[in-house]
Length: 351
Image (cartoon, rainbow, N blue to C red; front, side, top):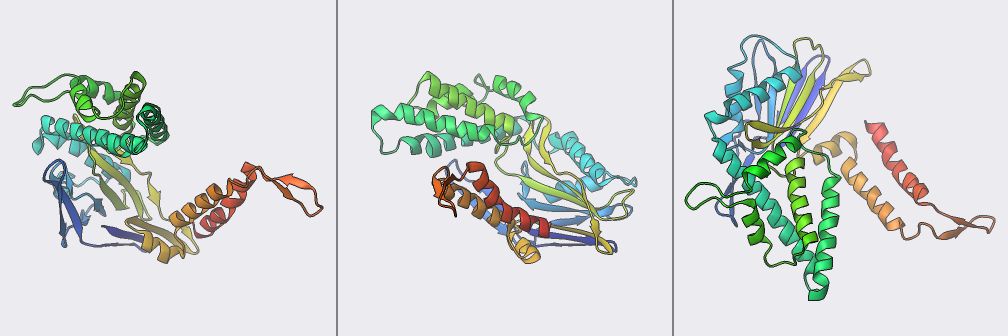
């Protein structure tokens, strides 16, 4: 678990981070090994003339190599030209893509992508399909399985895409894995994989169509694809024209072909606060930091508001007696608006 905090004002910048990182290694398809390192490097200063540092969280490795090693190698390529904060981030991403083949192969990246797709399909079978039909009559199972698949896919379709470049790469990925590959034993195709994984659950043309839709959704959306782990890399400091602290981040999620799959964070600069400027940004596992800084946890507050809305739905639409004895109806919109008001107010005060 990583906890980090960025504090900046008109005078300068202070960074804090714990030094423990946990590495997870697959021992077999069913077993993983976890190891915690107590002295991991998570804050990497660049040094003059570059006035910034790089903060690292989440995964220890990126495609098998420690992310801190990659950042240090990239630093040596910068030269003496300073950039904007977003410019440093773009430089790092370009450097990664240019050097992918220096520590990993195209086939290794392909295999990781297929492993991620297979893990998604296993989750679909065990946690969606099998769960939906457990303890039910066999005659009901096809209908229940199809409904569970459709609901799950609708939820996935509503999520934002991790990387906007993935949809254009999806067709090529499916084309490459639609047939067996070379190797000893020969590499399985996606069709073989689907048949092996779903042979013990109800099947129909509609169910198969939803399984294929699920696979396309996780590939195009980058939902734990092409890697199940992520790396969080944040660039914070002063760009070439910055007078106040600024930060920009990126989440890395493996690579597909020669493309590093990424989600960019918008640039954030210190904002006016009283007579000075302030940049306060907790990162990674930071619930307790947020609670100390704000006096409340916005995520917990949001969940409480949502739970209140859901529990109140049973009374929505039922007539209630007014002060004059007349009947009135509480609308769905009114309930949600009233339930959201306290959360919106607190967020405004502590924003």
